[in-house]
Image (cartoon, rainbow, N blue to C red; front, side, top):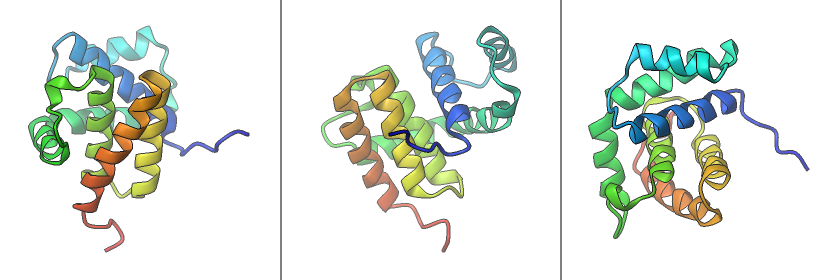
Length: 143
């Protein structure tokens, strides 16, 4: 049974990979050169680039605020203790929860899928629990 993906699912996956790579390289700001090199090296589909750029620029522009939001809602876990891939998934989804008009359920479900795909089966539950707490504090985009 195939799950239908949100139109931004592929861009979100590229964004996760880019954020992960940046964290591994200790690059905590948006670099146009790094972004363009990533697109070329991984042959990113041009249809994904716009949303991909939007979310990674957004994560880096709000990096410290996102970290504060995540740490405020994670019990017994600070960011430095989280696996890098989980941290990247959570930052990406927190950015979308706070700054996009997308449905909370789409954002959280896509984040869970990314965590399961790139991290561990347990990461899906961890990501779900933390993002659910964060989502409860964010006004509904329909409001």
